[in-house]
Length: 317
Image (cartoon, rainbow, N blue to C red):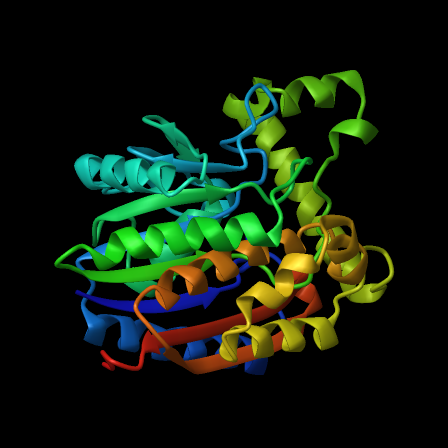
């Protein structure tokens, strides 16, 4: 029974709109160091908490949380495509334990995930199938959204279950920090886009997916030139959030409402709830110490880009 944690921002814009070479080198060094720490831990099971961007979850049924019993990555923005190595029996046991802890979650035997799940597995583990992984979706863009408290309680339930296993468990969180890329909102789109958001976007034609990705790329290029063209990044809030995680004050975030978070740091900042859930899961193993903290606002990636690792004080690497 042991655990390790790593939280990492994701971005689909790598290779499309990149920052200066020295910034890329800095990010690469951070990822390399994290990958080495994870390799030393040598996980036997990964619990990967991530959001979606209307690629796998739509308004035909939009759960606040969903645990995957099987999952396939779609390969958007040239990330890895194909099935994840999901251990079905363990995933079913995790979902059962979460429900018994009083947290309602959906389950999926055909979960479809995008770069939010594929990218951390590629960067930190070397591929989609190098280690068994239970994917846990936290809705971060499609209102109504779960709040910080429910995300924390979800994480605590997962952590209590993971603590009962005789396995080395890695908690990975993908997303955040401050950012607001051009994600469509149901209340503000035309009928055709509304139909996409309600489910027909699950299998987009190749030309339409390419056009959608190009819109994000163009938005990033514009944001580099004018950082008021989208919601500005908020490095002050980002650093305060990282401080909160490091200090173990997760419940302090319970009172921060969804509208207030969007106003502070952008509508996609809700992805940080994956970080809160991951740290809550780790807290089930006792007090923790953090390491590998990284932060830089990177407008080319429309992101307050960060990373943070942690391990229990009782089971250091």
